[in-house]
Length: 266
Ligand code: GLP
Image (cartoon, rainbow, N blue to C red; front, side, top):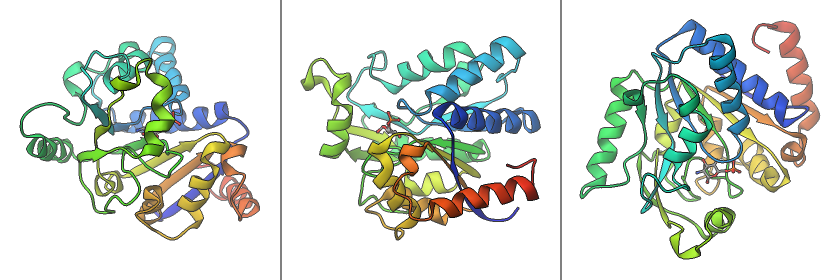
């Protein structure tokens, strides 16, 4: 497999979701005991809708799949409507047949969170590593909850959320006092070990972060820039998120060439 970083500017968010869902379903066909890394936020919802549809309408089974979510808030009860566990149940897990015991979230409770985080990492390794990791990106360039200045070698741990992230997510909390200021997240080092990474980004709000991640220097100040070190990462962008890329035409041409040279991959 050739190392590659693919930048796909999609015609719409729907096209991006179609392409990512197709990648997940193709990977599942070739490996029914696939290990999937899942993300939360509004960005991956279209992919989850398509996976639920594939299960309901086409009988696709996730019965042997194992999942690891990227992050979870510290200080929210697991049944709080803003918890990522509830988000994933609502958007995906309640609609497919993944066995509950195969679903994993980073630990957010207990006296010794550091050792629970090490156990979470050990669990990923015991399952053979993550085959396919879905990602979104924060407007400050974060991936998971790896905020700017996270070590590029970081592992699963508790992070203090930045003011920018708190402001971006404040709309979900009727009572501002309820909004958690801490989260447990897979580290950048953890994410880089996934065999394939599929990152989606939509909207102009993310355009600068996307440009910095793809065309800037690798820097802990833009955690998503660490993906430049990954051998198999694809960015699925809508035109707004792609709008500040300086080599936009080049990425379009590269996509056309790829479709011509390796139609099954494009
Ligand atoms: C949160 C999540 C990230 C996600 C980001 C973007 O901060 N921890 O994993 O990528 O939000 O969210 P959205 O997709 O809603 O823009």
